[in-house]
Length: 396
Ligand SMILES: [Zn+2]
Ligand SMILES: [Zn+2]
Image 1 (cartoon, rainbow, N blue to C red):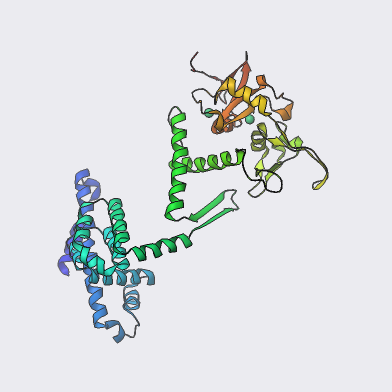
Image 2: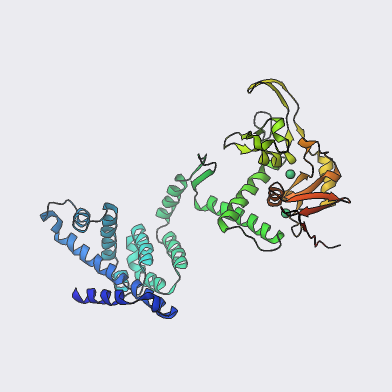
């Protein structure tokens, strides 16, 4: 015991700031090999259970005894006992772990394989330990999963059913104005989700030029948002209450007029939080509009027809002219673009070819957030918030 302590004291005495990169890496390896300490803990806990020492102290289980004596949380103590039992049942794994040949994470994966099919595991134990010794962790997990399917197909099928039952998805707006998404999917639908998001991200990467400042998390969120938007925009959606599903924004007409946003009037979405009139102006650029004449705040008197701000024929014409986002250096395809009113229709701008320009969603947001666009001789000229012109290096 005292020699273990002296080794740890020696490690502690190192001034890490003085180590070379290589020595720091060695230092971390040395500590990882302290997994051997974990293996020893396993042996000790197994012996503790065998002797039922905890009963002499009036405890009902080894976990309770450990938690009390070592000041551990109950779940940590229980995990420690579970691992000790698993290591007892997997002698080859215990040996390799004790010699520092395999990591604690690998032991975890092997233990769950053992739990799934104990007899078959005993026969395959040397091969699985060899896999743990030589493979990267992700690879090991795949190999043990494949092994499990083969070792006990019936149990594997039950596991699959159980996972399918666990599927769930919660989507709820939170008080901070964000929408929280939490869910679990089985392997099949999970793969579908990952594939769709990845494909959308790839397509965006291919169509964008220049570096992308977004984090991977932001890119995934944008991709899922775009997938939903395209789903909603597609023609053959089933109708709900006589209409195709769509996002509804409710706003006073006066609030759409430029500058009125400063009066603090907000636009409303159905389920999430109120949005600023600036965002409502962007959404209204290229949307379907229904005029509702109302008395007071909530008494509708007359409901107009729902009409497209940009009629399909005009949109086709803009698509032919612009062929994609016109922001300098962008060029994302028309399917991802909104038709932006250079002078907003709420401010009296005309919905005509020479007042409209195709912008992808991120650039449409940019333009409604301080950047500018003017039509000069039938073509758009973009400006930074300071008024300077952004050069268009599009091919002649
Ligand atoms: Zn716009
Ligand atoms: Zn763009």
